[in-house]
Image (cartoon, rainbow, N blue to C red; front, side, top):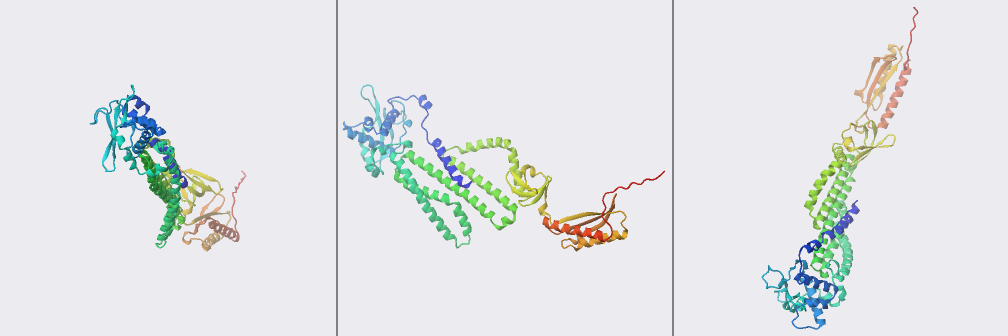
Length: 522
């Protein structure tokens, strides 16, 4: 199960990122708000659409040029302004005013809106503004002011990604999905491969260094367990670090930076909980191999259950942490899980009963793995104690499964925990046995019992128990000091053969059921 932990969380991240990404206003919201065709919002949307397609000459009509520039110069200014806005002042058109007169709540003149401020070479911020201009005929539009256009060249010269824009083909500089330029989409996978390779190298070097430092401490065996458990997470963490450093040269726009930050934090969370998951499983496996765990089957069972519960708890917390990083309301989710948990508990009460039954069995230990037990008239060896059921292999080699919820309430006779075996046999001698023969059998049976090597001396009892309907009953009782059923069977056989020989030497014999009919003449 451990190998599927990280892929599961990765799939969860990829599947949820699409829902967690900021979404544009819905069509219903846009329809509910009346948007004028000559508003700042519409002009900005149109400018953004044209520059995304590379139609910079058409986009230049949204620049308020001081003089009529040539087409090449106008298109170049539109291209540079788009690059400056993307890198220095990310503008969401939906946040601009939908009114033809602009935002009435700012302190600017009518028909003038400010989008933000961008620092110049002096360090002082200069405003980016749009103004409403009458176009040809009845085609008014909002355009970037002459002051804003005059600063475009200076702002463009301060961009850090100039080295990319100088030699990169123009089509690769256009925005693609998720507001990333096409060259960034090509560079990101290459950077990912480099980060993966570097992560493997750094992870191996880190594990080797830690292993060398801990060999002299006497706990190197535990260090090896932990290093094996965190091998994958360490590679992921080192790879994320390298990717985060390299991503600085990708010159991502603000949405791309937000997405990258979310991805790095989420995958970092995955690496952390992946490491915890591996540590819990690795420590549990290491403890189960210890001599004290092998000598105590009950401890091994409790340890196995604790390891399962621990890994499940880590996986559950990991899912919550990932969902929280992706922006999902975890509090509402937990509240929903609480209500759903009640319904689930009612629907799966038998399963819950069995789980608590398994905990009761492992804590109270009425039976353990490997014990010979007698449960509900079924005798066999306990093979497995799970969360739901316990399996017992009978003497006929079949397997009987008991639900733990019911097993916890049953009468369980553990034959493996007895300290000795009880021996009881009744010798029925025929009527006609003399008193002398009877005393000889009593004394001889006592000597046979006490003469065996496995007999517990103080527990021997040989008595004439009853004058039965068909025989004189002598009860021979005792205990053998052994815990092995096979050894007890061998000792019982030896004593029974000795008692049969004793009866033969005494001149009497064992009785069998008979009935005597006496007929009298009248």
